[in-house]
Length: 67
Image (tube, rainbow, N blue to C red; front, side, top):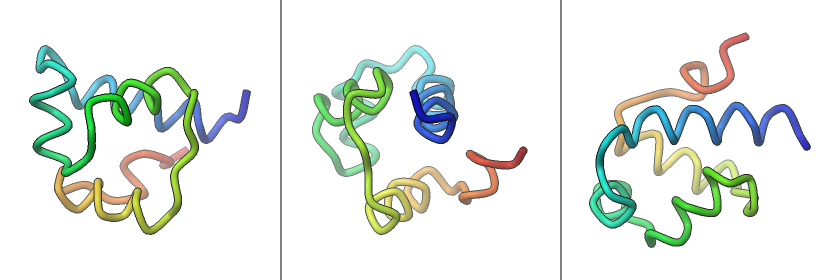
């Protein structure tokens, strides 16, 4: 397992909170299955796509990969 994938999965899960996959995915502009697969480390993401998602969450790469 890639440490960066793990950090992203934990970050997304924490940000989703109690929202459903559908609610959170709508906010991010992706499908619910994409959110699920990212949380489960079953899907990789390009930097461009991650940048768009982080922008919608009003976060930065540093918020995900700080340490």
